[in-house]
Image (cartoon, rainbow, N blue to C red; front, side, top):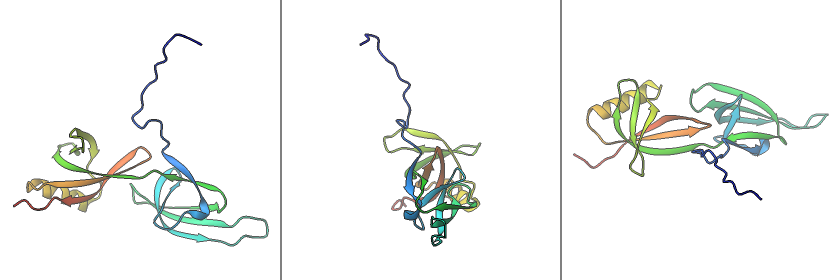
Length: 160
């Protein structure tokens, strides 16, 4: 039809959605759900019986995976809920900058410098003390819905 070339802006996530739909009645405890626009881990699910006028309802209690806040939602069990795509990736710690960012080594050998130290005091202290002692440390970074945060620390053993 036309001889002109089309140029498209490339996106890092290939246009993949941040969430996917899942029927409310099939979401279980320890799964993930989006409540009030936040990715949450489900800690409690209760289902009410169908009433006189229709739907059974699911009552979800979730903990925000990044802030730790408790959120609740009630959804008819036949309706769809958004479920976040949650990824966990391990990176080796290279450096901690003075402004609270960490420098991480990715699997392909490049560096990732846009991750902050976690807000959790105990986890932050564990990372800093291990780094100060010169240990090799793996950090687990959890990402969902365009946010990411360090959620676990693991020491690479065997070096004395």
